[in-house]
Length: 326
Image 1 (cartoon, one colour):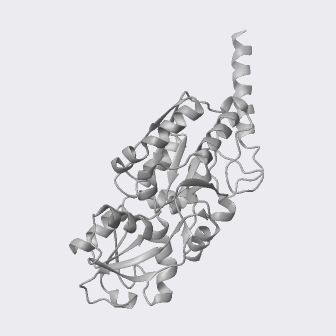
Image 2 (tube, rainbow, N blue to C red; image 1 turned 135 degrees about the horizontal axis):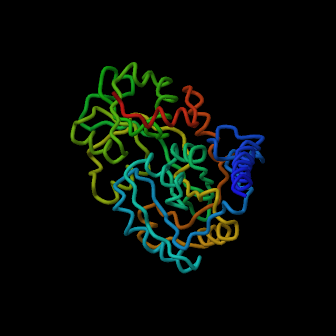
Image 3 (cartoon, rainbow, N blue to C red; image 1 turned 45 degrees about the horizontal axis):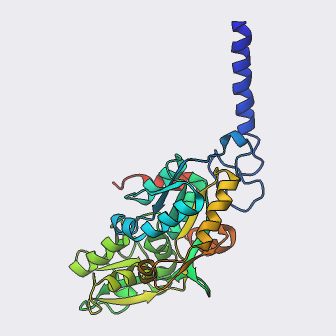
């Protein structure tokens, strides 16, 4: 009997290994995920036993600024979701883009609000499925890449920054790294060749670093800059903008691909039905709701920017970006 049990376990393991290899199309998705319908996001697990329906749903916001700023701000949203879904929804603070992506990949969070560049990594590395961005009755909000300097500096155009120290935020950031590498060369400025890149870690660190004189300039997201100005963290006379890009899609809210479908659908309806509290509207430039998005269509420009500088949003690129700089 022991021999039959052992043989059965062995055959089960072999069957599981073959099942894992049955994915006919994966694209840039990491090994645990499959994209049979080729919409660029992970399909729900074919095996219903892998669906998740946790009693407590963990929700996290992008760490483009200090996470504690948003725990209070998003409290009305998490309270609404708890009541609407009928399960406890808790805020899960993270300190970096990599930590946020890892939290979803490992199953510690089920819903995450990712910034633009890390959204693509989250899709491929963590099985995230973007479903909404902030917006209003007219549609989705966007943001722009800005190259900022102190107002009292001598720099008047991007090319003047050759030989200087310019802050980028992190390797995975769209406006904080990938878009500058793709767009600045046309402005006469090649990141890494014409100036020294210094990674600050976050957009607010870059902005305040320019104000304090730690960096000569910084590549930042316009919406973060505007939020800091509205909060009174900056005076309007402190900074100048040397360059401003066309709009990019803003942060995306995504669910984990393995959420049980009925729970997933209920959660999405709760997000779409929610109208922002007054504090959220003020913080998010009068956005008052979550607007549906599709990653394949709405993140095309972000993928094009990355491809334009020879970057990909796959596992190899993610591991390279996550390694500490020497």
